[in-house]
Amino acid sequence: MTVFAALLVGLIFGFGLLVSGMASPDKVLGFLDLAGAWDPSLALVMVGAIAVGVVGFAVARRRTVSFLGQDMKLPTSERIDLRLVIGSLLFGIGWGLVGLCPGPALVALGTGQVKALAFFLAMLAGMGAFELLEHRKSRLALKTS
Amino acid sequence: MTIDWNAFTPGAALAGGALIGTAAAMFLLFNGRIAGISGVLGGLLRPAQFDATWRLAFLGGLVAAPLLYSLLGGHAGAHIDAGFGVLVTAGFLVGIGTRYGSGCTSGHGVCGLSRLSPRSLMATLSFMAAGFATVYVVRHLLGS
Image (cartoon, rainbow over all chains, first blue to last red; front, side, top):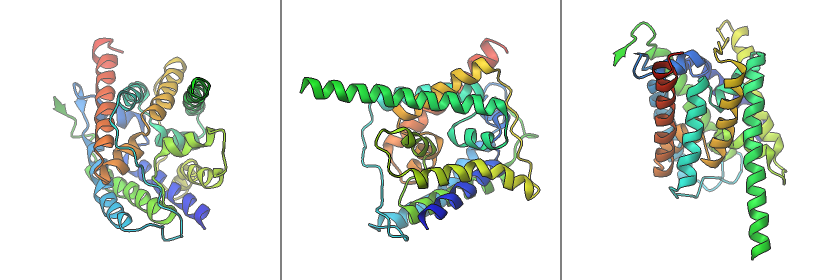
């Protein structure tokens, strides 16, 4: 049941990206181009998403298990550090270069384009590099302790 | 700043945004999880992996969305302008950046802001600023 829910959520999320224009790199770059002919549409995607999201999160806050009996896995970290900021800046540069962030990259992959596949594989490599670096760091920490 | 009113699609943006918000709320209320795409995908690369099924189902839904959307009569083609060198560089930056930053447009931008997290606000401001700056440099300083 949770797997079916995850599939359905993925589909609805993908439809949202397609309907809103977020899945179109041209549209995204038009939004990020403040100095050119600016297309403010995507600001409204955030407005629409957060307006609904706020309600969902308000309901979720009062629960310890989900409607399907799963533990609520909410983020616990509130730390604002260099890691968060530099990671987000690197992500923003990549986003601005092509106009794809992770969700739209997966939707683009589903359109079967080779360019989308190249972006997706490079994104996986970036995530893999993070795991390797983190793994090495935790091993070093074990050795020195 | 000039606004391109011809490209402005407020109705579609709001409706699509509401669908995204609905998906994020459903994922939380049914699966107890944050619908952060980079986190769901990156979690698959963790050495100790035991929860791959729901992750793959969620990502599979995203990948299947354009096919179903075009079967229903929608336009699902995404025009990618960038060349392969830029694509690979950008993809790598998005991958490593979202994992160090613990989230992307969905996890921080939609879910984090929906639960009023200052950490997510900081992340969102950072990647938006970098996105604006990058497009400015590429389009107006380098003039491509």
